[in-house]
Length: 178
Image 1 (cartoon, one colour):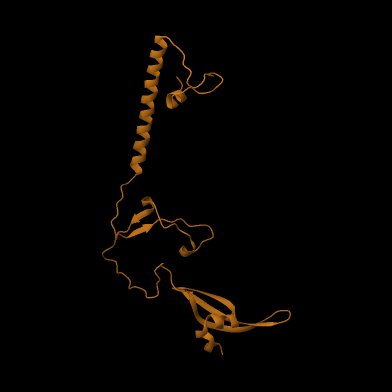
Image 2 (spheres, rainbow, N blue to C red; image 1 turned 180 degrees about the vertical axis):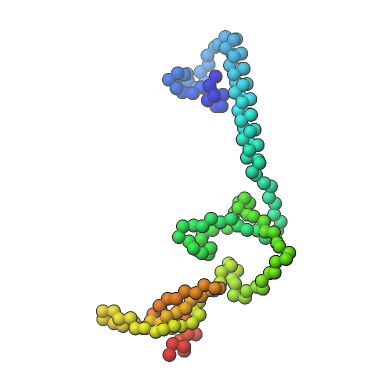
């Protein structure tokens, strides 16, 4: 008996065996006995292989339980072209295997809460101060631009913005531009 027939209970459709599914052949007693012995051998060997694979898989598996209110770390891999966590579009449901339990260090000093931290764990990004002013000349017009220092937490970057648009978007800085 072939392993295919032992697994699926029907003979394989190969040029060696062109019997139809459901077609029965009459065999003598010795052939049936030999087939039954082969079938039992195949099944015991497959059971041993499955048990061995299960043993190896269970060695690396761990039982994880969480309670409501536990602190956990979420294992997230970096996405190509995304340098900030808030740019990633994450699914709100995670498998337990992606979570790691947070163990608090009793000697660690907890920092005081930052007032400007939002609920989605991002800092508000906005203009901090203004820098130089320049006139950008195009073919037939001139555009007044102002240097803006943007920041959040401890990262600051600088851009040149059109002065009129910046005044409209951020009126609190308009008296400083004079």
